[in-house]
Length: 251
Image 1: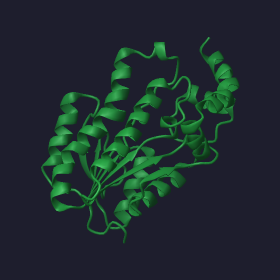
Image 2: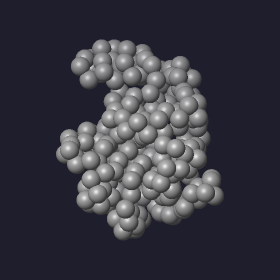
Image 3: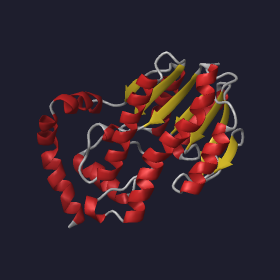
Image 4: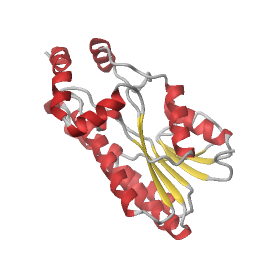
């Protein structure tokens, strides 16, 4: 079994995709602890209640992670705001950046000393295609996921030769309750493809097991990630008409 005997921490493991990932890792021998505000769906997972949006909750989670050895840390927890950038309430903006970016960095800090001492381990950051193709009306979400992508790349370079691997997985939109009614309107209006959560969870688990570096899910989005990196003006043109349509949702 691919995770036999491994001690694994998963943030956001009580969510729809998180629950699928946790179940698969347990089925393959993993000893999984779920860090979340809600209890996990599978009774076979240990539960560590926490609120990563607050400094107190984050530091409590970091302390627990730092107190014991881990083979894998999966930073999956995330939140999303959809709408004009100026309309995001300050408390929502703070929560978005705290959960999507600050928490993964802080929790990685917590597990790294023991991983580096053991010369083995894996940090897994689950980002988003939106972190590479920065969509209008998802400004804070795209920014936080872009930061997570940058952190993953920088940390991987820093840890080269240490025995600790860094995996970054970027799904595109997924058919889950994570999406608000407005986001579903956006998807219908722009004909955005939305993947099945079971398929996405399987791809994430495969990437973790194979200790892959960067994984972008979905076509043509994976192609546009590369195009946006070298010729963002072309992506501007491709998205412009949809951006104008979506803006009508907020009039």
